[in-house]
Length: 266
Length: 290
Figure (cartoon, helix red, strand yellow):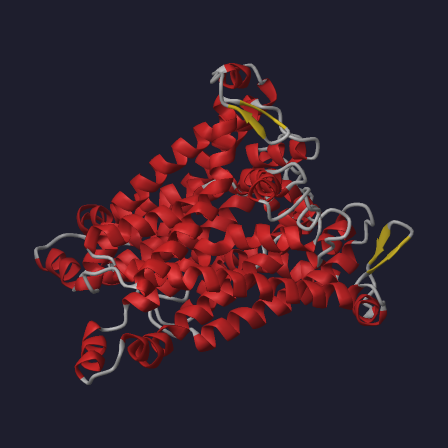
């Protein structure tokens, strides 16, 4: 691009700034509110306080919901990464029947969550499975599986076939090749898939609302509380979650983007 | 692995297990629920219990009842508008990103995508507090002098849904457009420059046409996500902002008419599939489609 800022560049930069402001404003408001008292949209700048964070530590409902979210997230990650990787390994290099089954895996991700959620709700009722954390984990796993599958499959496809052939030529068994060659090559994609799966599970609301029993995850809890308006301690929670999210993003970028950029260049 | 798999019994067993798993998982947990759901749409409800006899009554009701089609149509118009707004904002931003060099380009892209990972529910709540009657937007407009008193223009109505959805979905438009812009070979732009085209001409004749697949993908993404969303309309729509998703959900809650709700879901699914297919058809450009 030209060195001198031309009017069009300034215009583009202005729109980009506007977009950034628009995207970050809904994140900014709760964070500011977590350090200052806000009443009816007026921020009291004079007295920064950490009282909302103290209140958060005493809000047992929210902490219980947070714990449920983490439990669901970890179970979802384990199930989806194991099955997603197995599916990717299975479908990689297979021609017959792959596209149709792959389409089925992507369905819950492409369909509006309300449809996936309702379909699972009726399904669980038909097979007489009580709504519980188990049904939530199944719902989340079905939902995030496509992402893990795709991440691992893309890595597999960019992996050179010669590595596997060399391993066989050198006398390695199928297991040895798998543990020493394939798995180490997939590890960064699996870590990236883990992070994405966890982030998606952490935020999943619609399916969870429909298939959860008595225990609710954090977004569902917040959703229920929102009808009345949040208490200020939620702002503290938002600030903490945002920091956590940024950390996740940095990690995801670390594991996924350099690989993709490297494969794009070759 | 397949060569070795046929030689050892343990591996053959494993391979069989993997095959069974590979087929069972998607079929049991995705296809079967969706199939049951589809079948439900042909049942009916009589005094709170589901009658398991096939009927087309739900679909007939959807097409003849004066309530459902207008809401369905309005929701489609709303979601198309959301897609248009998102693209009008995302295109210049994505274009700007591609003019940046190296590290900056991806750092800024990340910056614009991070809000995606932030809790959806919390964002809706925050936007609601921005748009509200006493919200930051009204305060700002009054302070600048555009409004004399807080306006109810974007409080609990269709406008609020439109603005909130657009705000939430912009990143989904930025990514595909950025990817399609980034894939345009620099040599084409230089050739155009060498042949004496102005910056505007190069943009209109080279960049814009080549980036349209990305725009199509972006539009289809945003539309599908917007029309499938129920949380936003429920939270910021108030009484007047009634969308198809809310009607659908009410069939499972208050109305307790699961078969009719299933039929409405089928209508929603058909629109979503059409949008995805259109997006695929016009967005065929490596890396921009899912």
